[in-house]
Each structure stands twice: as C-alpha cells, then as structure tokens.
Length: 189
Image 1: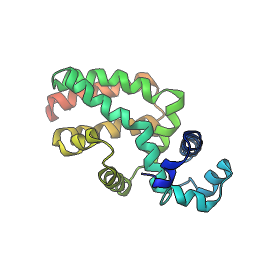
Image 2: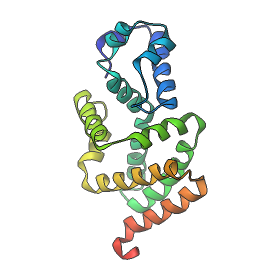
Image 3: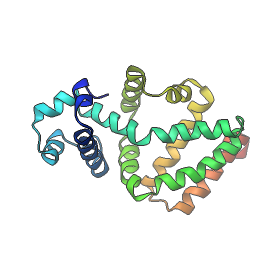
C-alpha cells in the first residue's frame, strides 16, 4: 500500500503515478522494472517516489492489486451466483478469463506477472494483502483449501498461455480439460 503521502496527492497526480506504474509493469517484469524508469516517465525525483512507496515491490503489489483484484472477486461472485456449484462456476469463469486475459490492455501485464512470478513473490504478496487488509475475498481464496488448490491449477494454466503462446482456442480446450480433471479427479487422466 502506498504511504499516506500518496493518498494526500490530488487525484490527477495519483492517476499519473498509477498510469506510469502500469506502463512500466506492462513493458517489464518486476525484476526488469526500475524506479529510474518510472521517475523519468513522471519527471519526479527518486526521493518523491520513496515518499509514495517503500520500494518498487510495494508499488508493483499496489498496481497488481488495483488492476487485477477483480479477477478473484469475479470468481467468488460466480461461485455465489451458482450457489456454490463449482463446475458451473469454473465453466463460466472460463469465458470471463478468456475475455480479460486476451484484452490488449491486460495481456502484457498478465504476461509479465505470470512469467516472473515466484514462490517468494507469492509469499510477499500474501503478506502485503494481509498487512493492508485490502481484500476480504482474497483471504477467502487463500483460506479455503479447495480454492487454494484450484488457484494453483488456474495460475499454472494461465502461465501456459504465455509460455507456449496459446491462442484463445487452445486455452479454452486446455481449461475445459482442467475443469474435467478438477471435477472428476485423477481417474480422468
């Protein structure tokens, strides 16, 4: 979460900073991104950046949360909509994912996120979310063992989109097989 100084900025200034961070993380992974590039884009000093954020990772998590929190929330809303019917939820979620992942304004951000994500980043992001209490829905997903397993599988298949350059049709086919595996178990394989 940004420091309090960030939230005291005018909305227009906050929006410029947020857009500069989004641009940076669309073009580069967290490991490739630099504070230097961001401050040059914003024409601010390095000190100003650190008045707003503790470090680059925190800025990344803030943007990740801001830009993609709706992905997990949408899953939970579908789950509630279908009265906790996991199969119906997963099948409709496929359409949602295809639409959101392949949108031009999301694709590179998703790509950079999934191709550079590590266990350490997962751990740090979980701590960031807990510290900032930014999403009760996120906690539901982490604390539900069934959802935690599904999340790992979903993240794996989404990562494969970028590893193997899958078109939408391939993702849909692989996703549907994954749902069948989730619903029918190891005997399906």
